[in-house]
Image 1 (cartoon, rainbow, N blue to C red):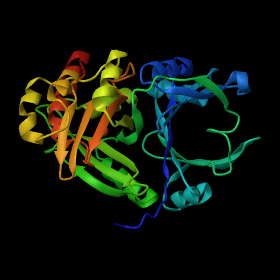
Image 2 (spheres, rainbow, N blue to C red):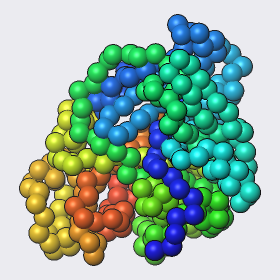
Image 3 (cartoon, rainbow, N blue to C red):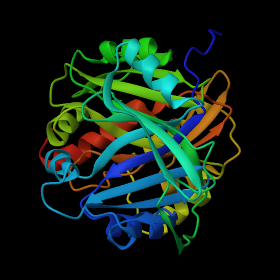
Length: 362
Ligand code: FE2
């Protein structure tokens, strides 16, 4: 194991830029079961934007929207639509993290600054990664409040669906850019490459992609990076890049300890998932061997299973949650496996292609 040259405690929060944060908060509360914990906006003295903090398990989502024309968030929304703008890391020392990242070649998004109120202070700084996505470094060791200074509590509990933590965040980058960003995560943030998939692993009749999984923070942070590969028709990655307007976060995987219960609840509340054909389940016992779960229940929900040397995993992918075919969520349960479901890629991509076909973007 190589020494961790860039200490990261955890993914602190994921920030979304959205057109209407009030409605996003409602959606994520009632559909995914997040609790609305804090708010900062017009009512609390913020003049140009609103921020809603939602929480479930160890997952924190921040939804930010502009409330006046000409706001920088509005300009980003005009390009990308609702999207993940920031994957923020909690670190021991924000200034060291920022200065080290810049010295190692990162581009500054915001120099270190301090926010404070009666509860103390929080130190922050941000760097750019692919596309318009940023990583914010944050430390609140000297802060007694919940999230950030000047946010006020909102007591709007959600009914949990059993989501526990962010398992991984996947980025799509332009053709030929994957290795550049792999090297960036190695050089700047000291990440190591866990796995690599080429277009032979991940191809169907029509589409292909390549992917490398980068890991940092002593394995607590996992970032697969995809790029399109040449195929007969437009790949899902090309579709994403076109509709998103460049590189960005494609999906966020959320971990549960009971995928059958979680997905049953999410489906009952209206989240739509990608479906694979029934034949997928005919081959499954041969492919993955004995598993604890009832196969009929998995098939009913459309949950996929894959095995690696260390165990198995169960996973399912939502349809895009935005109008644009860009951002979606993965729900994942790990039974020992530390991989990402390579055995499911083909069935999954064929399912995505059926959706692309309907959208007329294949
Ligand atoms: Fe994933």
